[in-house]
Image 1 (cartoon, rainbow, N blue to C red):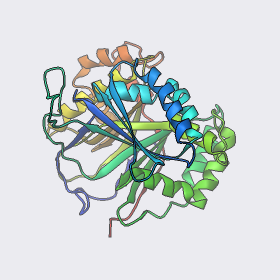
Image 2 (cartoon, helix red, strand yellow; image 1 turned 120 degrees about the vertical axis):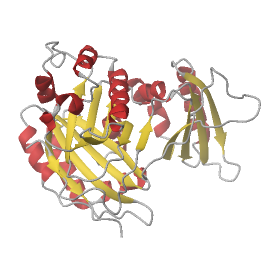
Image 3 (cartoon, rainbow, N blue to C red; image 1 turned 180 degrees about the vertical axis):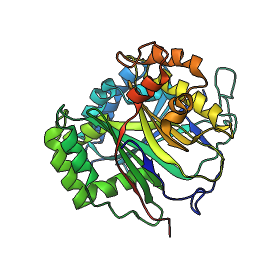
Length: 377
């Protein structure tokens, strides 16, 4: 079984049909805000670690500037802001192994962090927008849902056992707090790669911490530990942090078409990119999904593109069979665009024979489980 049907009609009371588009690919400048809570007495150590890190960040392509600020009310609270030419170069850096190594010295003196990313819409003062300082042209309209995913690989030969463990767990309580709720968790596998996509209304970080604290979830995570290709120890804070940092698979684009009615099926497609081509491949899929959302006859109702390094995953809710329209299912404008897609794919997926059905078969992921919470109270 490779898809999951939603046994509900659209729209639901909690999911009004409207055109929604969220993307990192609009070319506008990015402001990153990092809130840091430093252990008492470790302020100087933190400052020294930051200065070493900044020497390296300053040479990263796309980086513009940084500011480090300390609270005037609580010396343990720090704020790091950075500006980037656009979101893609920042995401390429923050998701890299270089970044994992670079921030490691800082974590021994940090109690907690929170990262926020914003496109710049307006600015005033001495540095006004120019052709080289691009601003977001207009506000985007969202749907109040945050989408995120995790991905990791398991040891070859363990796929069936891992799928069994991941499919059979008691879901956590969906209501996290007064403002945050888990909406949906969709889990897929492609060979030995696992992808877990979640949808949250409210605070993503609060939701992730809520899930991690649930005993039944912790038991499943411990049960799959022996099968992971990357070792982790959930009892070791640093080991767990590094694992989940590497596993993060951010959503770089989402679009919901404003089309009413009909039952949909949820599918996930895996596009292994050529080395260094992951972001470009994700942008290609994002551009086409934007165009397709305007086609009233299109079968794809929602599409989310996730990307990290050379791993690109596209989660789609589609009307009808997946293979009924391979062009639309793959996120292509037409069959001719398949040539551009295949030039970005890695070996094994990039056979240039024009067989879109074959390409769709290679890309589709097997569904493991899909859990939706009841509508918000």
